[in-house]
Length: 424
Image 1 (cartoon, one colour):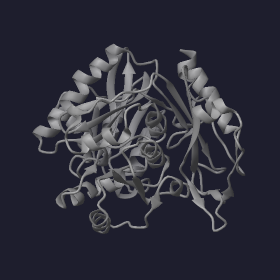
Image 2 (tube, helix red, strand yellow):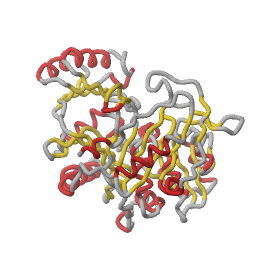
Image 3 (tube, rainbow, N blue to C red):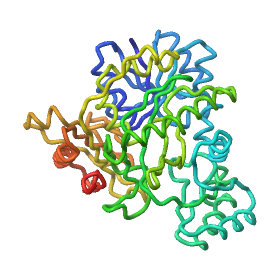
């Protein structure tokens, strides 16, 4: 099987790494890929959807997997499906679950999926009125895609009103913030739960927990994610059962009834409040860095999971996971998330420890290959050090041992990834 992966981050690298170990896969291509994906396959410099579809057709590619949200929202799946090409991901219509927070919240309300009390509006007056009816903290969200940065948790009514004003004026997120969602803040613990869907059937992956803040103990600014671990002991069979019955099944049924069956990754941002799972948001692709921990936990061939979902035949797939834990630590550049940093050469010590060689690896993200053939840190989140173990503690220790082997100017990372699970 020959596979094309769309995207350039650690998420796409991790999917490629899982496919590289899959005996069913012969060739892997990335469009555009990053400076390290050329070690797993071949990078393509084609951006246009029609040109990509031409290339896939001409080269007999069996499956295309879309990593990031932007091409999904922009309709890459529709272009490929019109040509009869096999592609994993939702159509543009179904991708509105992430592309528009207003669409998503209204969909949840229509189908009785538990979510926070909210209003959607483009009126500052309405926003202020609803903000006054809530207790702080208050959540203000831009409607459109903002690269994971369009959610403000305001600590006061004044801060919430300021956030609403900046979004609606276009100052904060441009057109993405011209309509907003204001919602009540839920006090609980947050989970990332992923279901691979084929329109009717689905497979739920082990629940993960992300660490959004830049600094230890969840301090500092929000980021795209500074690390994650899976599975989390904060989820029990009761919560999985509630997610099945109250969230996933009504969502897939509702999407089908509304004429946009959902195929791809349904990423549920879940807040658990007094043992009740409540949906914060949906995304329509893998989280990054959660994908980096989930891929190595997959025991069955990755190609089977993606291909069977893409052709609507998950029912016949036998998907299994290793009885292990994975912890991923994001290593970021010096000035992340405030501004771009100068490129810095990445030096990785040779690993002599057999245990570490077998149970830890790097997923590369914001890296480029120089003319000298060396890897350089050129993005905000540079790479993820992933450790596997029979316990979260063991996986965490291996991840941080690997962190110690990686060097570049200005490297930064949190030192407490998975702390919630270890103190639980």
